[in-house]
Image 1 (cartoon, helix red, strand yellow):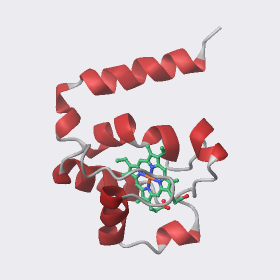
Image 2 (image 1 turned 180 degrees about the horizontal axis):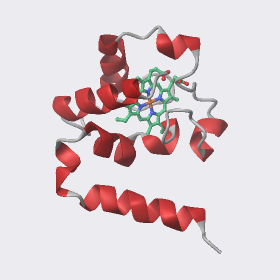
Image 3 (image 1 turned 90 degrees about the horizontal axis):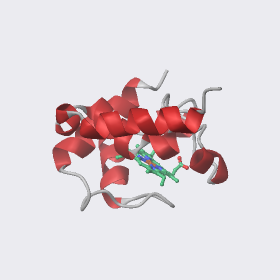
Length: 104
Ligand code: HEC
């Protein structure tokens, strides 16, 4: 039997160990954002469901400009912590850019 949590943590540690973690928005997203916002941005995670985080399919998320998203990620929003002391500006920008690719 495949244990999904084990597979997920294996993927997460691969992403963290990858040398490209700094430059790739996708790697940063998977390491720092996916736990809440979900792999496809649908917030279909334990935290996402518990906190009722809005999925990228939500009209409210679609109205966010890229600058507003960068601001929310830097300074925090609702229950989301501020990332400005945890990630570089470049990491914030690239992970937001990746998040935006999930908006359909
Ligand atoms: C601990 C959970 C958590 C983590 C980790 C997290 N977020 Fe959030 N995020 C939230 C919550 C809660 C909100 C508040 C709005 C909502 O419910 O969607 C939010 C809102 C946002 C928004 C505003 C638009 C929206 O979806 O509502 C953006 C953009 C965003 N997050 C991006 C990120 C990025 C990029 C990362 C990784 C660097 C990240 N988040 C990590 C919980 C989280």
